[in-house]
Image 1 (cartoon, rainbow, N blue to C red):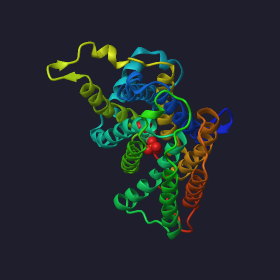
Image 2: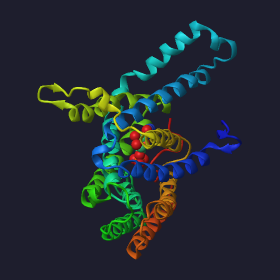
Image 3: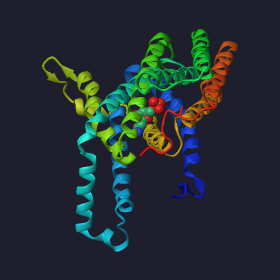
Image 4: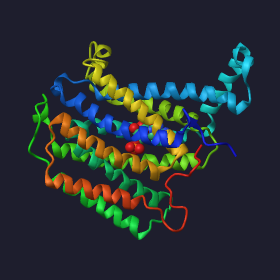
Length: 352
Ligand code: C5P
């Protein structure tokens, strides 16, 4: 039995969970700021950001998968500097990535690309804290798809928690309206559009997550190889919105390549990097912890972005917001209570 992996002496499981909580909160705040701090016509392309995230995530996953081949093969030391060894490692990795069942990753890849694009629409039209709370509906959709596709059984407490979650999100939506703060595009925010985008993003998140779980459970492939496959299959759907927004009836718009990174400033790059980190952390949390603990991490991030929204964006805390958020947090806590019989985890303890 291998010892649990550690980083600087701390269990990777907890490091990845705490980092995921901070990452979730940071992503919401920075993505929101990057979108609303300038007028919509002067903001960067969400499609380009999604594409960059997939390219970077895929590259990092490829490097990790390549490095992990050593431990899988038992190769070490001086053989690593041998060009022939490197060639065989590349070939082996290629075979792993393009294994016959790789197409299975195309479904979650498309769904995640849609989700990541919708996330930009949602965050551009809702307050950061409102988005964060509403996005907790992912638990609801993940549960529904797990019951339907994986035939998971949920205890009455979990169903009750899901009901509370829906009520809590509903309460939070009531207080939408009075705009606060002074950012350039506050008046362009459309709460209904934002909420619809969140609902659809939660739907794709749940379906993608459950489908990814099914693929991971039913195969022996390395998690990092699966991540490379996920990024590869994401590239084409990530290009679709870019091509559509840059094409005219007579062909591609002139200078469309320059448009790809127009207005791509520091905050846009920060959003991309934090999203890359989130994707990699999600993979680590699925491997070293499980989806239940992942739920905890995201609910912790509500509190972080909640307090930061008040401090940074002049977010006005209303009684209904506090009430709704509390109901969402209690529902998340209730949902994450262990059941007496084993086997209700969304993700297996040791996914590969
Ligand atoms: O919120 P949720 O858990 O659904 O978000 C998952 C996010 O993590 C998505 O942005 C998705 O692109 C990313 N992801 C990833 N690699 C995985 C699983 C998810 O990059 N193996």
